[in-house]
Image 1 (cartoon, rainbow, N blue to C red):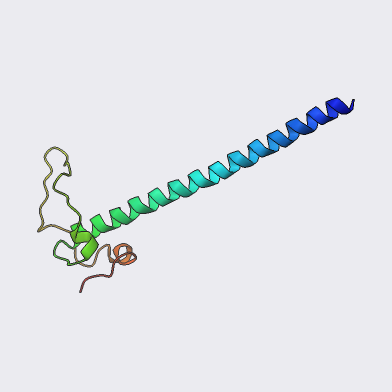
Image 2: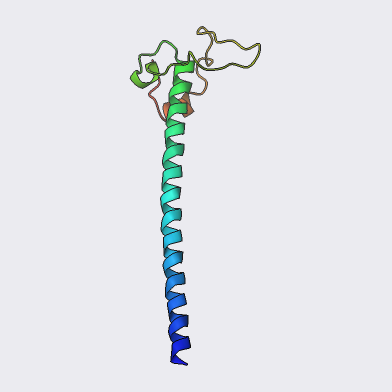
Length: 100
């Protein structure tokens, strides 16, 4: 009977070890995913700033190259167009100071 109890204990220990490994990997994968999402959001914020303030001298926004960006059929980019004055300042101002 002790041999059976010993095997049960081995399975329980191994199962617990596998569970901890799974949990550790899940935490790591979640961290990686969150980091990638934050990078995407940061880049998106820079692009929004560039589009809304095309004449801004914001360093990271001026490094963005949109020349390879594809546009929907019939759409075109016009640097003269941008956000209407006074709009979207709250959301943009959270990541970038509003140019005065």
